[in-house]
Length: 119
Image (cartoon, one colour):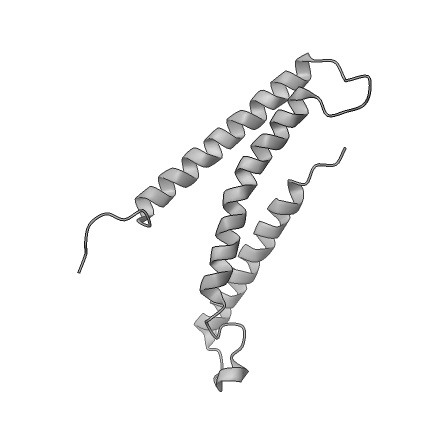
């Protein structure tokens, strides 16, 4: 029984994800433009352009981190990674799903590590 539109509908999620990524990339690009046109600070502190780029990265990584935590919360109760504990074996589809989940985890961790600034 469907009660009406929900914020968890795929359309809303897709639109939010696209808009958040688009605005984060715009902020990063504007930070690159600002840093291209400015001179480096004499005290070697973070310039305005670099701060803008970092803000864009944070805006991009924050929703990804929330997704990562929620994804872990959904996967933890499953027996996908602990089949022996529940007396079962993984079939071919379960192994393929487990491999996909591992690659998603690796991709998310690499994106988060890429976003750590190094000055």
